[in-house]
Length: 203
Image (cartoon, rainbow, N blue to C red; front, side, top):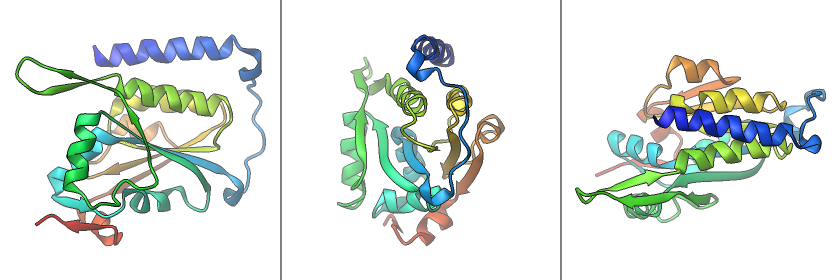
């Protein structure tokens, strides 16, 4: 059900974009040298919080772990998608500067009958921003930090607008479908994250 909802969202976004002449340019300009390319980072926050917890890692600064994986490109902005409940929990677990430099984008948290909080709309927000920024030529390279195959169609779609893509999976390998949907794929295991100098083992 979740996948089908995202598929419908992709279709609606693409229809709106194609109907707008200013955004319907399909010609691809020559690829800029990497140092002149603009990059944006899109982090599947809640998914990442669970991966870090499973690895028993405490982050010093998340952006410093991720940023090297855009190469020499100019970082325009990095977004982290989650809900307030999960973000507040993460702030208590990680170092004070763990999320400095990130723009936090909140979806909705829905209380459930068993006392838990269910996310609503978080993936849709990430997908919408990916496609919007690619269609408006706001970035030349988009790095998705996730191992969720629900984003496959979104990556394929933004490449139609001439935006190159990367996937960074942390703590768990991404499925083949996600790996093959991007231009560059990188996996960081626990030792790689700790080796960045921006994370420590959780005591």
